[in-house]
Length: 213
Image (tube, rainbow, N blue to C red; front, top):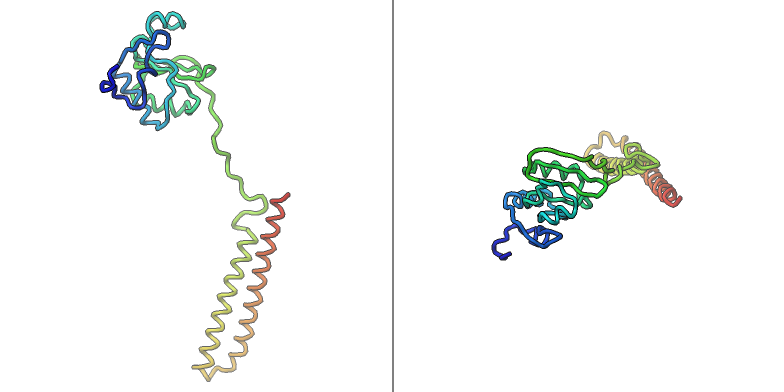
């Protein structure tokens, strides 16, 4: 096969040639659809069988009018594909004939006429397990989040009180009696902040101990 004449980059002549005789029959519309399917799926297609010479087709027990003998059929392994997604993509690019062989692990596709045979592959389990919520607490009820939030809010409150206290002391002599009360309020905010930090640390340690069990 002249290299320049081969225009299907993801396949080689050896993949398409008859497995029994090595003969090659190029069916351009079929190979165009095979390449389109490869481009659609963006995954390698493992071709188990493509063109079959009449003698090889008889040897393997192929149908008398098998499309393999026209170079218009391909048996594709499902070891690296989801059969449902593969079938949908194959139909989308224009394949019309489908044969399902779950025990042998491949799907037959051809140019038609439109038909199908065999039992479809069983639905595969999802590749990723469902994400479980945290065992100890959900995020919205997290003691760590609550403790950290309380500490942050209290720290901001204490800082705000200190600013207000300084401002009143310097500019509002008429309400100087309020300044000691603001000082007390600042101490309360600081105590709340320290309590929040302590609760956060405790929650973190407790989570760590739970993971070690």
